[in-house]
Length: 214
Figure 1 (tube, rainbow, N blue to C red):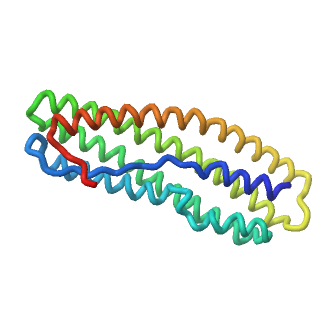
Figure 2: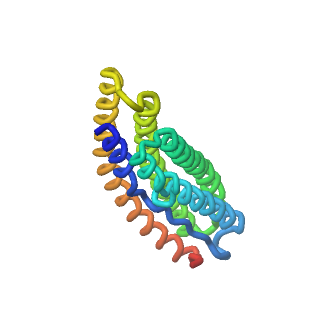
Figure 3: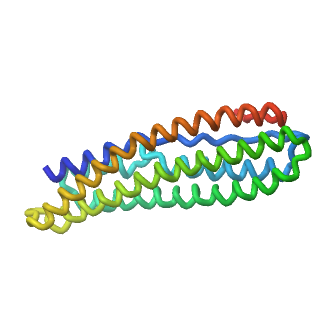
């Protein structure tokens, strides 16, 4: 039963927000420095996407098989590797916050008042969108860490689980359930902000004469 709880705990975090990276083409209404900084942010966002995508992690593909075969040591290595990727994604998403602050400084150089106002709005919503990604990723990190602890108990007690460890597993399972409930609210917020982001993006691109590369 404990094995089933651990596997379920992993499966319920498979759904993940897809981060969309955009690139700017040069436009005379904004400086090349502004364009370059945004492209730098887009590159970081793309890297975070690859790192954070649970569906693209071979470690998690292997985890279910390792749990079924009771290869708990292998499962522990897999969850540790996946957790490492999630934490690296967090690092890149955190870097985006500072880059957006730099982009805000560059927007001060936009001479067209209408474009500048739109740029500032776009940057502000971009910060909000990135914040929701960080929050969503953090929930998954919390869940992965608790799952790691549960697998660690199986590694230590592969034949028999003590009453104390069983209580720990039950407590962790309840905590994972609580985090799973938070996912619903986090997803609603992500969708809401993403909608605002697309509207602000469309407005800014139009006013600045920018295009997205396919």
